[in-house]
Image (cartoon, rainbow, N blue to C red; front, top):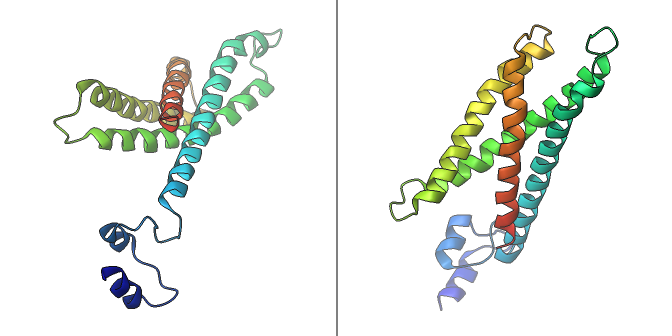
Length: 181
């Protein structure tokens, strides 16, 4: 009987609000996507984010290791082509840091305030989130200084270029594993 009243009370063409659909137990959200479709979409997005983070991690790590082998000319000066590769990688790293901030923040929020949760996932999510914040705080000002041509802090770039691939790879693994559950 409730379903009949609901069917009559919703005008044709107007869909339920997400809150109303949750209250009535409907598996459709406001866009007409079923719960299973939404889960598949979420899994696909997680796999795309995971693949992106892993590709950027590998690209930065490999370039960081081979950079000294090709970047310098016979006079010991860094060639412009080597700088151009870093310019492209910096943009990819910045986008990856935004993804990391979003995914690690969501994971951190998942374990906040739940006293029954195991310490290990809570600690892992907090370390990843605050590590990402720390990495972003080191990356952004150095990236701007580098783009403006006034960066003279190579040690900071060494820390960024070693920590960032590790953190990206760990988060990529977590996201990929979350889709296979």
